[in-house]
Image 1 (cartoon, rainbow, N blue to C red):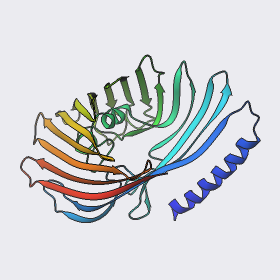
Image 2 (image 1 turned 135 degrees about the vertical axis):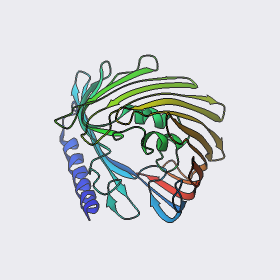
Image 3 (image 1 turned 180 degrees about the vertical axis):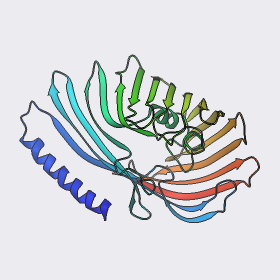
Image 4 (image 1 turned 60 degrees about the vertical axis):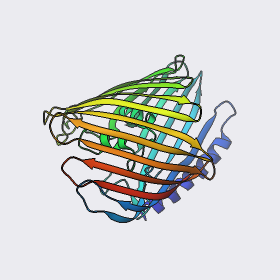
Length: 330
């Protein structure tokens, strides 16, 4: 009911915003839009050492979400903008990624930008490490099937969320294909602060990325430092991906090397996807994950997919998952 009520309110806000925009002078250009994605899959899912579960799951390929965003041209090249975005679990209708998740957990910020100076956003911002991870692997931001995402964010390596609350994030303009980000999340009497830096380069078939972050915010969150190098290269109908990174956990004294290799190959109206990844800890068991899938686009907004994943952790029974699903963007 909460999601339904919010959707009704968002539509009302959208309609009111449209009327407001129509009434503004021609010199003040404004925009307001509602958007999102719903991802549902059916299959069998098994983590290493656990029992297999069969059923309907939301957000395995891309976490389902909806949002509102808007901007206003303030003149002289200066633009004010905002975004508020909420995750949802479409299989049950529940809000958030899990019980207790912040409602606007995906994004919640307001900012200013200019073409020559870049953008400064204040609020809850997506981390640059998460962006770097999703850019340079064949399965993108899939928490269900991407070895890179699972190894970096859900395997006890990196701490902190994929979005930081109480944060300020600066994104530079592009300099011949090169851009930078810098962001910090204030501690606000909840442990230390978080900080991160990144650089991205896109030039023809080659793309490269580097991200670094330090997490110390949160009295119950382990302090960690992480960095990651990533790259991709387009070769005809194929695209090759590679990643390598390291995480140091100050609380446990353990460190983790995270490696990823993958490819996507255009095939018909879709793409064949393959991604391999490994976690190599200083102490403890290695984890090796391989995913193979096919993503077929019925239209620009709707795609169908089928995925098989093998997930192995030394000393435990193998995890094998497979699923078919649909994603729709609006």
